[in-house]
Length: 95
Image 1 (cartoon, one colour):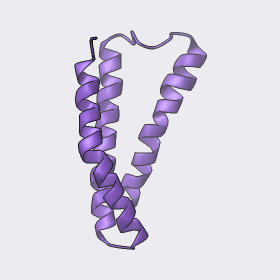
Image 2: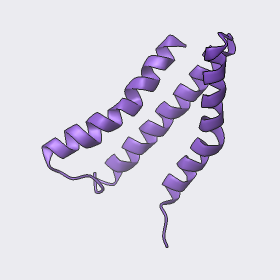
Image 3: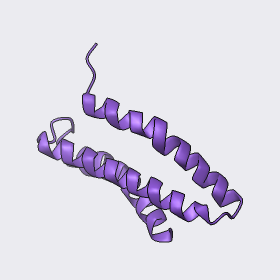
Image 4: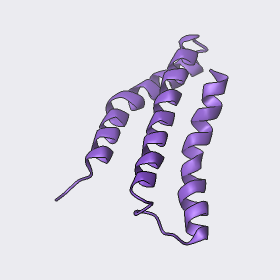
């Protein structure tokens, strides 16, 4: 079995860093603790960094892993993956 090193590395960071930090941010939010903003800032920046790497890696590969049909590319690839940019971006502004 062959795995993509980039995906494995990014998902390892997600599992061991962003996951637990997201949970702590959620608890801080529920308790109205001021640490919420710092945690939210860190997690949002981390997510946006991962998004930039994801899109840049795909662009560098010539969009080889994306269906070139316009509806699929713009609707699915850009639109749905764009949610992962929009939400952390809004949370970053809130932090």
